Amino acid sequence: MSTATDTPPTTVQAVEAAHVLQTYKRQPVVFVRGEGVWLVADDGTRYLDMLSGIGVNVLGHAHPALVAAVREQVGELVHTSNLFFHPFQGELAARLTKASGLERAFFCNSGAEAVEGCLKFSRRFWYTAGTPRAQFIAFERGFSGRTMGALSTTWDEHYRTPFEPLVPEVRFVSNEDPDDLLAAVSEQTAAIIAEPIQGEGGVRPLPPQIVAAINKACAASGALYIADEVQSGLGRTGQMFHFEALGLRPDLISVGKALGAGVPIGAVLVSSRVAASISAGDHGTTYGGNPLACRAALAVLDTLEHGLLDHVRRIGPIFADRLQALARKHPMVVEVRGAGLMQGLVLDRDAAAVVPAALERGLIVNRTAERVVRLLPPYVISEAEITEALSRLDAALTAVQGA
Ligand SMILES: *Cc1c(COP(=O)(O)O)cnc(C)c1O
Image 1: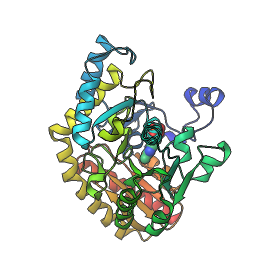
Image 2: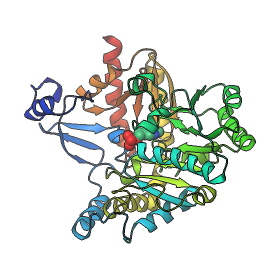
Image 3: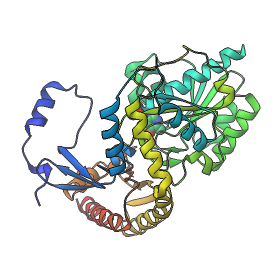
């Protein structure tokens, strides 16, 4: 089998090496197209995609509903700015608010920007109330994105330290000990931010005692709760939003990744009391919620509602069971955790070697939080494709174990 790993650097790689700012360590493969759960490289090699562009390509690649919506919209109207109305932003807001139970939506272009909006709207809420609050409480191992605000509530010091000073008055608390949170939250706290399942932090569902502590702390102090659903939201776990499954009650929700299935769009969803504190001019963005991005997102929501969410609900537990079986075969896998199609295999060692071993076997997986193999397959994955993916992962784990 020819693989991208043993071919010499292509022109694409050489041009990038010379001109692209070197912020990413890329795998040595150049993808040129995709079909369903498969990605095809420039040398014709096919890879089973168990990462979906980090939780983005939820419809798989080249899904007919997304292709048709985007093709049609590109030929009609791509962008107008938020100075004017277009037919799709209101409709998308109506669909997302209905799905979340919150009241209003603000559109942006990425997950980090959605978190940024949540932080700003939280501050604005307290400013409007006449009792300004500055503090944000975030969790150990939490990830919010790379802009200055979102970075401030991101736990990993390697990401933060070179860019300090960041937003002041952010406090990190334990994601295991509820007393740490309860002691930290006060009437100075503007908001608590937490991912219902930490993604970058190693696919860690928020433990029930932390969920209870967030609800209790918000009720006692009035602090707002921001559910960062950028990775866990929009069907990934079999729920439209994972906060529902945990019993959390957010005032603000950040949405990204899955929303446009590859067309960049993010959203902030807010409760009516937060919405009431926002005035025209408080926040804005040139591209946010443009016609093209909204059409893509509407195609995603249509597809989810017409059977795909039900498919995730059915296939998610099968996926988890199969991973448990795989873990029993490999002593180096110490835990399988996650929900639905958001799963992590926790190893007894650094998982870095699994990524190239899988790639050599035509399988795309990701390593996060050092020891975790993260799997975020497209929602359209079939049972047979899961079988194929896990057989390749089995071989990759065996190779790593023997190395
Ligand atoms: C990916 C992610 C972000 C940042 O999204 P970008 O689109 O990369 O800016 C924020 N929060 C969570 C939970 C994420 O997984």
